[in-house]
Image 1 (tube, rainbow, N blue to C red):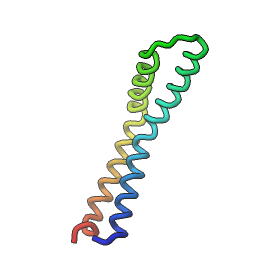
Image 2 (spheres, rainbow, N blue to C red):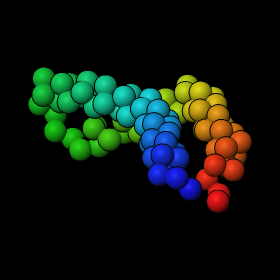
Image 3 (tube, rainbow, N blue to C red):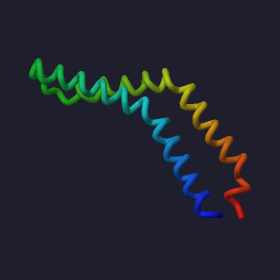
Image 4 (cartoon, helix red, strand yellow):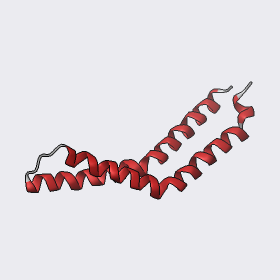
Length: 89
């Protein structure tokens, strides 16, 4: 296995992981920011107020982006299996 193939595989795997995680992270970031602003304005410092909306936002983003995430991981796996002869020598 050549070094170029290893680097390309690692780069593709990293890109795939980031693309799959991005929707959940972005939704969680936006909801966390809104909750933090709400807590600062109302001076409510309840710890569960920060976590529960984020968890709900992540579940909603999984429901919304689930088919897209499945498509990405399926494409990556198919490409990996189609090019397996490049990785095994």
